[in-house]
Length: 299
Image 1 (cartoon, rainbow, N blue to C red):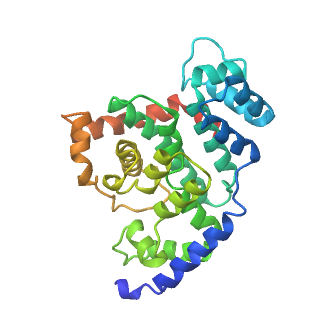
Image 2 (image 1 turned 90 degrees about the vertical axis):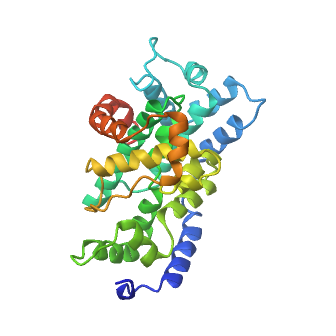
C-alpha cells in the first residue's frame, strides 16, 4: 500500500523544512521572553532583575500571578507580587511558564474541530505528564507540564503552515483501507515527523535542552539523550490520553510502550506494570478537573 501514497517523500520533506525555516522568521518569541531567558540563564541574576522584566509586560504579570495562585501549586499564602512569585516558584519554573504561554500565542488555537481537539489533547497530555512524573516519584517541576503541552507542536505547525500536505495526510488517515497509524503515514507522506519539527522549533526558541529533547523523542524516549525519564513521562502520558479517547484523530492503532524504556521504568518503580497504567487511566479525568484553573491560564 505504501506505493499508493502519492506524495514524493524527499520533495515533501524539503518543502516542509524550507517552510519551517521561513516560518521561524515569523514565529519569534517576544523580546520580554528573550530577556527572561537571558536573565534566568545567568548565575549572577537577581530576583529584582527578573521581576522588573516580567512587570514590563502587564499581561504576562497577570498570568504568572494567576498561575502561582492556582491549585496546581497549592501555596497556603496568596502570591500577590511578582517578587514573591519568583521566590516561591524559582527562576526555572518562571522561565518554563513564560515560554509555554508565549509559544501558544504564536499559533491559531481556534477554528476547525480538528484543531480544537488537538489543543485539548495537548492540554490533557500536559496534565498527564505531570501525573506520570508524580507516580514515578519524580520531583514535580513546571517542565513536565510545558513539555507535555508542547509535545505535538510539530503537528500544530504542519496543520497551520502546510495545510495542503496535512490535508493529504488526514485524507489517507480516514481512508477505509488504511492500515497504518497516523505516525507511519506522517513518515510516508511528509518525510519528516512532527517530533523532529517540534524539536527544531523549540531549539530555535531557545528552550532548555531537556524540554527540547523530550519533545523530539516523545515517541521513542529510549533515544533521548538529555533527560530520558522526562521523555518517558510524555510518552506514557500521550499513550494514556490516546487510550482515553482524548485525541484529535480516530486512530485506534495505539502506539505501544517503547520497550527500550522498560529498564529505566523499573529503576524508578521496580514493580511497574499494566496495573500502573490502569491506575493512571482511572485517575486522569480527576487530574484534568483538579488542574482546570491552571490549564485555563494556557488557553
